[in-house]
Length: 110
Length: 110
DNA sequence: TTATCATATGAACAAATGAACATATGTTAT
DNA sequence: ATAACATATGTTCATTTGTTCATATGATAA
Image 1: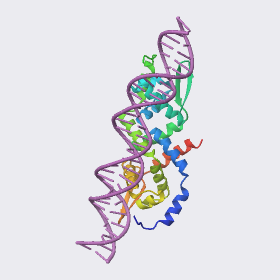
Image 2: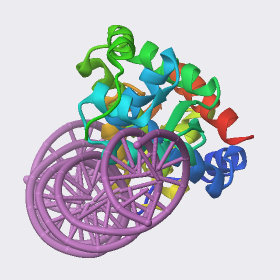
Image 3: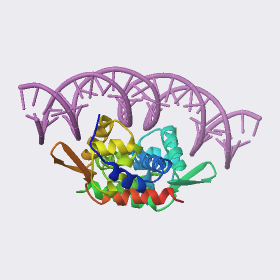
Image 4: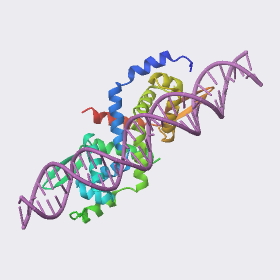
C-alpha cells in the first residue's frame, strides 16, 4: 500500500486532534446513546423522574434489563437517582442529554 | 413482578414518546458516533476534506478498515464524497456533526 | 424475627460489531 | 491492451453487547 504524499496535511490535522483517551471517552459517551432501549429511557425521563418498575412497564421489558441499562446511563452521568423507601427514582442528570438528542433528531429529520 | 400503580404516569409519558421507528433511527445515528475510529475520522474532517489513504495513514489503520467505516458514515449521511481521478475525497456532510460532537465534548469536560 | 416489594448484580448465551485479509472495481498512464 | 494506484467489498474471526434467568441486597411492614 504505497500511497501518494500527505505529509503536510497529516501534520496539520494531527495537530488539531484531541488525545486518544479523550476521543475514546467521547465515543464511549455516544455509544451509550446508541441503543434504542437507552434512548427510550432517556426520552421517558424528559417528562419527569420515574422509578425503575415504571420504566420497565412503559417499555414492556423486564426490571432486570432496565436496571442494567440504568447502570450504564448512571456511569455515563446521563442520569442520577434518589431513593425513597423501596423505590428508586431516576432523572436526567443535566441538559446535555436534551441537546444531544435534540441535535440527533434534527439530523434524521431531513 | 407485581408492581405498584403507575397508570397515570404511563399514559402521560407514552403520549410524548416518538414512534419506535424514529427512536430506533435515532439510536442508530448515535451508534455511528459510538466508535473511536469513526470519531477520529469525523474529527479529522473538521479541518478539511481528506482522501481515504490520508485518513488511513493518519489513524495508522488499513485502507480497508477506513473504507468500511466511511461506508457507515456515508449511509448515516454524516459524510459525503467526491471523486477526483483515482482519489476519493471525503468531507463532512453538514454541521450537525460538529454540534453533536461539540455537545458530547461539553458533557465529558465536567 | 419473617414476609414482601423494589432494585441490583452475576453468569450464561445469542446477536451484533470492528478489524484483517484477500480480492474486486474503478481510474489513469504507458 | 497491461500495469500501477486508489478505493470498495466479501469473508472470517475475535470481541463486545443486550437480554434473560437466578439470586442477592435493601427497605418496609407485620
